[in-house]
Length: 232
Image 1 (cartoon, one colour):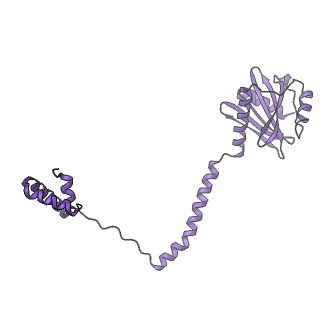
Image 2: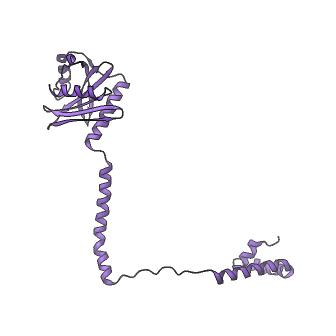
């Protein structure tokens, strides 16, 4: 087999074993063209080595004893700062209690609507709905009759929010369903309102109970409903 440039390059770099080197040398002695190719390759290699710029690798910085002590003293501080920075990032990335509750309540409202399980007890009578809930929960929620104001009670269901059983009162305004999630609260809080995933959400705490309201009803009418409920 005729030697190629790859074989010549390997011979030039000393990568051929002894038998292969002897065979190539015999071939070059008998083939002037092959010898000329090898000489050109060797001249080019020599020129590259002579003209190429070489840069020494950067020397390692040597700390004087005082500097070494200072860095050793600062190392724990840097480590603590890194831990605090990482911990703060994780804390800020986690949703707050109100946001988590809002997501959970909207999800519960959507599930009940899609499953067509809005009420476990069907009744527009607050005196029927309240005892039904009280017999199944460790607390007795207030059930308001707001039918005269245009918000008809249609019933109630049991739900599970924030790792606890809750009462869900169900009202209706025209074709819009309003879910009111109720459970005990140790402190009172003013009314807050915002939108979440296409639904309007309001919540407040009064009379030892926490109320979360969610509906696709427009903001103004849901605000009227929340105000009426909080006044009872």
